[in-house]
Length: 346
Image (cartoon, rainbow, N blue to C red; front, side, top):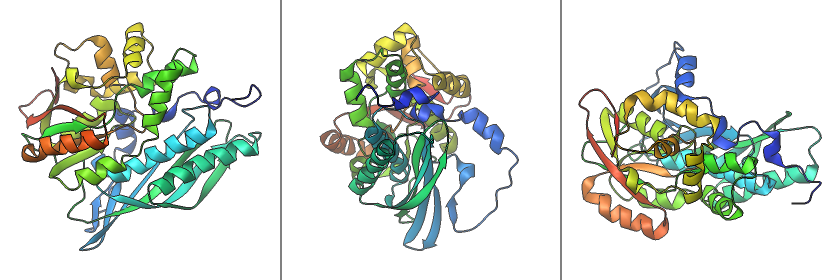
């Protein structure tokens, strides 16, 4: 990057999904809003799910989502790719295929046109990689740049996945490493290595398409993508929605090595504290060290898919995922809810 080019991350107070309103605060903001019923609305905002699903026919349902955030990378093309991959992921988490997208963009009035062009090009290229189309969008002027997509996809009504279908005995599989929130926070202070950031950027631009394509061939009972609420925040939503407990083997979690070192030093994003405030009362930390707990609350951007898989299909799917997504992990199991805590770390 030339010295006279704008460093996008310096224009943002928070990076990527770390800018999300906390789950607890969001629930309070939505409290009391009337939910209108429609027999064809299979998933609405009252379900804390990744996208809405509306049944069009016995064989076709519409999946819709929207996601945008401030810069998580200085390179505008890279920022556009990450934001697009992140937005597309919500449709993949529902078992759907994205088809049509709309740009959502806010840019400072003095941002160079070539920077805006590269940002949009990054989004376009990632959407086309997904086999979808960008058909328009909306932009406004704002001192802090932001970019993302509204995404429409399709799924068979009988094959859609939600975050509330996990069953006791299911295995928990996950597809990406944890720690992007810590790394991007450190990068804003020039504390993260180029090697770690290159790997983080590569994974954040990796679509969850391959994981989705394998997942829909197996008996997966629930799925969510892990983004701004962290692994524990999204796990808690799955446990609450499904009426179960989740047991997570901390030793099986793939943490970015440098993120672990930074977390031990106390280099943590603000969103981590919001996620901890939301989920901590429902989590039994067991013997997990503080830095491990912090990373499990770390807000991820364009994170992996967390799946609750039928035990008879779990090993086969895990091996298939390892072939297509080398960072796949087998994190733990789903148990019957016995009252009290919902998440148990071991």
